[in-house]
Every structure is written in C-alpha cells, then in structure tokens.
Amino acid sequence: MPSPVLRWLLPVIFAGCLLRCAPLSAQVAPSPDEPPQGPAGDPNQDSLQQPVETLKVNVNLVSLYFTVHDKHGVLVPHLTKDDFVIYEDKVQQTIKNFVAETDQPLTLGILLDTSGSQQNVLPLEQQAGSAFLERVLRAKDEAFLVSFDVNVDLLSDYTSNAHALARAMNKAQINVGSGGGGVPGIGQGPIPQSGTPKGTLLYDAVYLAGHDKLQQETGRKAIIILSDGQDQGSEEKLDDAIEAAQKSNTIVYVLLIADRGFYGQGLYTLGYTGDSAMRRLADQTGGRVIDVGNNGKKMEEAFGEIEDELRTQYVASYTPTNSRLDGSYRRVDVECKVPNTKVQARKGYYAVAPSD
Image 1 (tube, rainbow, N blue to C red):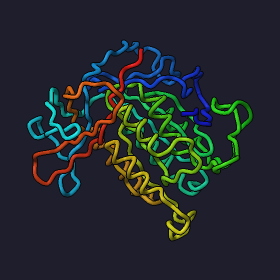
Image 2 (tube, one colour):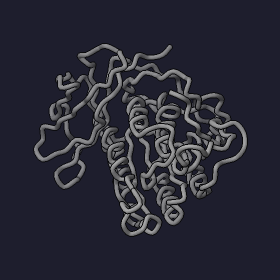
Image 3 (cartoon, helix red, strand yellow):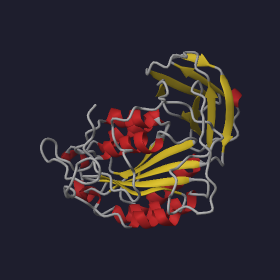
C-alpha cells in the first residue's frame, strides 16, 4: 500500500518512525501486568524517573480488555472468570487468566479535530479535554496528543504530565490551509490538491495513531477522538483505520461533536455520514460513540463515562486453539452468563507473526 501523504509536526525528533515501509509488528496480546512503554527523552517527564526495561510478550496469548454493562447501561463490577465464555471463530476458548483491572497503567491517544467544521466547538473540546486529562492521568499513565485537519500533527508526544498536554491542546488552532513547504509526508510539505479535497484526515490520524504510536505499547490502550466523525481526503480508508487499531489492541472512543450551525439544521442534507462511520470504528475496537452535539455539559459527562469505563475493565487471556500465525483475521465473541448484561469488547484480532 503506498505511503499516506501526511504531515506530522513533531515536538521531538522522530527519525523515520512515520514511514509506511516499516513492517507491521505482530498483533500479540499485551501482558496485562506490564506498564506502557513510551519513548525516552520526553522533556515533560520527571528527570528522576527510572528507565523501564524492554518487555517480552507471549505471542501465543490473546488478551481482551472489555467492560460489562447492565440493561440500564450501568457498569457491572466484581464478575469472575466463570461468568464469561470466549469464542474465536465460533470455537470456544479456554480462559487462562482473568483479572478485574482497576489500577493498571493506561496509554492514551487524544485525537483532536481542528478542521473548519469544528470552528465553533473547538474551545469546548479544549476545555473538557484538558479537564479530563487532569483527572485521569496518573504518574504511571501516558498520553499523546494529535490534531488532524488538512494535516496530521503530533502536538505532544508521550508524557504523564497532564499540564503539558493541556497546554498543547489549548494551543491547537483551526486549520483549513494546505500546509507548509517541503517534502510531503514527513512534516515539511503541502498536501497535493489534485483528486479528493483534503479537509479532515480523520482516518489517516487513527491509522497513524494505531500503527505508529500504539503498536509497540503494552497494557491498556485507548484512542479518544473528538470530532464530528466526517472524513475528507484521507489516503487510508475506514477499514484501514479499524485494522490499525485492532492490530495495536487499542479501544477507540468517539465523542461525536457536530456543530449543527456548520452543517445546517439537517445534517444529512449536506451528506453527513460521520456518525455511522464512527459507530463502526468504535464497535469493532471495543469502544463506543457518545453523541454530545455542541453541549459542554454533555461533553464533560461523556469524558466521565469514558474515565469510569477505563478504570473498570476486565482482561481475559487465552491461548488460541488455532495457533497459526498466518495474518488472518480472527473473530472474537465474549459472552457474559449474567442475565441482562452486555459485553463491550473488540470484535477480533489479526494473527500476525512477529517481526525480527
């Protein structure tokens, strides 16, 4: 697949990591006990923080992070391994490990829509997003911040410093231009204007976040997208974005923030399809879409719901009966035996052999 014509503006030198020619790493289950790994030299990190050892993971173990809700949508805690059944391609699997996760390190990617359609709601996103990061990030957690419009820009690399992330978020600006001058694809060039108009590179942003930033991380991982969900001009397709998230074992949440004033009172009159695309993205990765419109209070409540879910997760691990690492997609179904409950989990994974 050709390299996406994208531009990352890096706050740190990121030599060569954004090239699509790099081989894909394995879709392996992260060890549920291990902390997330971030790049060294983060200026926002405590200089006294000790380096973390390189991890080795078991390529034959699949780990699923999921939540359970009752019929009223309330989270259900305190369930046990015996309350669940897992199927891979309709074949029941034997659960080897099961833990109710409440305090495991968290790795977050915040994707902020700074395209023209968000002109009137960006301040709400910045205010609620900054408050969320201040609440949710702990010393052992990490997050990075990406904006997407006609470009995909890394505004803040991995850090546990919520204040630094909030500052970066508050500096984000609406961009409807075509970028700067230089070499396209590595943060230096205008995006070609032929073909499909470049306006909101949402799918590209999700792909890059999953493939380039979260692929090598371990533990609990989530992408939170603040957007109306409408993509325009991405090189990657929706399926590519979903695949990248699944291969990195990352849950995707979407705060659907649609400015009715921009689209007009009837969103669908202008061909708006962002909600359906985002629901598919979230559903396939074990997350969900929360429609907040342009209401600041709803946005704060949505962030609160996401925070609760991330802190009330189960993780179940199993060794697949199909041990072939042939790159195929394996459908996974997690069922809860408790009546009137619903499991929120990713729908599958790719059995890819690890690269050397």
